[in-house]
Image (cartoon, rainbow, N blue to C red):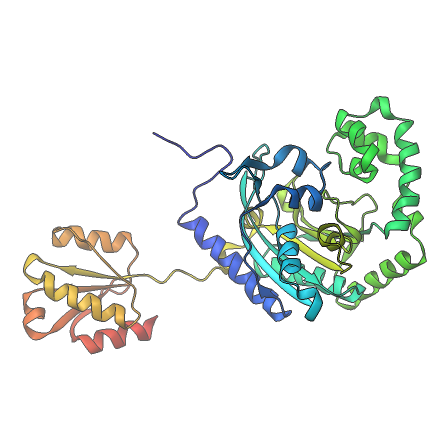
Length: 414
């Protein structure tokens, strides 16, 4: 028997109900903030992620599903959503006419990494991207929106961590000092850090090795190297977060794992998820559009994994599934039953029945298994009178009614 690939997962029944609830929550919250939906392709040119995400990141260097198509082009199954949305924005030329655009998206992403709790090689993300506005209030509002989205799923014990990576000049000054610090400890660091620090020293601070993190405890802090512009921007961000009643903590080691971030970065965490505590994360990427399209245009966004949200969400908030009306019939009333079923569905009633010629007892047992509230029984008498017996499974009450009354009764109870 062929089985699903490692790190992939079939989703059905309860998984789908959770996924639909998360997506519906996202759409409801994001639309309140003026975001509209965008759909981008699952596959893109590999260069998009190499340039946008960064060749030295783990995502690009180790985790991407990349292959040659039949035309010999290198294409990649998207490992994240931002680069593709930026590409769509640039390709559509929206920066020329109406640069302020706010989009949200959801769908599958792909990374070849070790599967773990709440993380798969095919995973799903909900994300937002906003272009054309550089303002600390916009940053604060997007963080607030992320919190509101998670709260609609009933996720408790949230912590918002923020930091500033500063602008280019601030980071250049900091990078010089960080490199010196790293070089003094190079022999105690892992091979990844020894490679990363040459091209992007900030990436070493995101290393998962405990031994490396021990070495970085006394590393210089980027906050101390922010110029006046970056420092003012960061202080205003905190002011607006307080105005929006977002409780936050500052994490000066927070750098995020992708190369395109600048200034504001943030993560929303839940203590209920153990070591992998981040549920939603993002930041500002004012240089990304210049990297990908030579266009100077600010941007900011975040993404959240639906699998992780599903682990933490309050399932009691999900609307109970509408129970189907189950139709019981007999060989001699099959055609009559099919006509009644058609009429019920035309009146937006969810109907189920057994295609096979099962006994009355078997059909009633199936109705109970499906948790049907109502059972419609169609015998010869009902057929001759153009009526139906309607039985309420919850109360045990039943009676013979005209079809119009059946529809009225069921729809009035839904």
